[in-house]
Length: 427
Image (tube, rainbow, N blue to C red; front, side, top):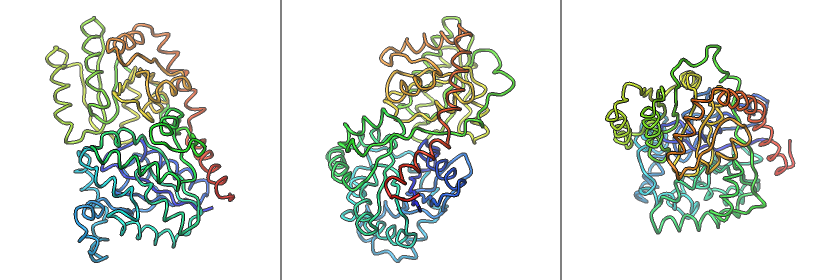
C-alpha cells in the first residue's frame, strides 16, 4: 500500500500538527511502509529529523498571488516553480506567521472551493504529481484542504483521509460572510472524504457537531511521541519551585493568566520562579512585553526567565528543569502535545478543565485541572503542587509511566496504518 501524506507547514513556526505528521511518517517509513510526506503551503519546521520531500505543493506564495489576481494563473510554469523554492517559502512563512485569520477569509474560502476556486492551477499540479505517484490512499492535512478531495477521489478512485488539527480556532475567527461560506463548504465537501482522524476524542466529538462532519466516518488516533527521549534527568530540578510555560506565546495560549498566578504566588510567600519558552510571532511581541512589564512592576522580574524558541535538545532540557508546566489556554485546546512531552519528562501539569485537557489528564494521571473561569483556581492548583511534594511526585511518576505506555509514536503509527488498510483492503 502506498500513501500520499500531505502536511501543512505552519509558516515558520513549530506546531503540534507538523511535529505529529512528520513523526508519524518517519515511524511508518522506518517500519518499511511506502509513505510519501509532501509539505503544503510552506516547508515543515520540526525538531526531529525531517522526512519526505523538500518540494512544497500549494506553495504559499503562488496561492496568495493567485488569490490576489487571476493573472497569476497565467504565470509561466518555470516562474511558478521558482516561487515554490524552499528559501522563498521559508521567508514568506516567517512573515505569514503574524497574519491573523480575519485577513485570510477570501483565500480560505477559495482553497475550500477546490476546482472552483482561484487556486485551481495548484490543484491541477497536485493531481499531476499524484497520478505519477499512484497512491492507494491520500491523507489531507486539515479541513481547509477538503476542496482537493473531490477531484482526487474522482480521478484516482482511491480513499481520502483527512486529519483534524484544531481548525475551529482559525475558522471561527474568519469574518463574515467568509466564516459562513467556509463552514458551508466544509459540510458539503466532507462527503468526499472516507475517514476523518482526530487526535483526541474531545475534538472528534466537537468536529461532528461544530462542522457537521459525519460521525460514522470519525476515528480517534491518539497522539504519539518518542517518550524515552524525554526521560527525566538524573539530577532533579533545582530549587526553588519552577513553573514553566512552553507553547506559542500569544493571548490565546494564556501566558498572561499564568503570569498573574505567578505574581499571586510570590505575594503569598511561595518561593518560585517562572520560565517561559516558545515561538513568538512579530504580532505578539507587544503582548509578551506587556506580560513581562506587569511582572516587573510587581517586583518579581528577577524571578522570570524568557528562553525563547528552542531546538529539540533545548526543549527537552527546558521541560526537565521544571517542577510543573502550565499552558492555561483561553480556548478549548484540540491537541496539547506539550502535555505529553512534559509528562514524559517527569513534569506534572496544571491545565484548565476544558478542551482535550480533561481527557489527557484522565488518561495519564499526570496533573491537576482547575476551573478556567476562576483565575484564582490556577494559583491554588500550582500552590498545591508546590506545597505537597508527595502529590507532586505521584503525578510526576504516574504521568511519565502512562505516557510511555499509551502515547507512543509506534501506537499512533499502527492505528493509522490499520485504518488505511481497512479503507483500501491492502496491507
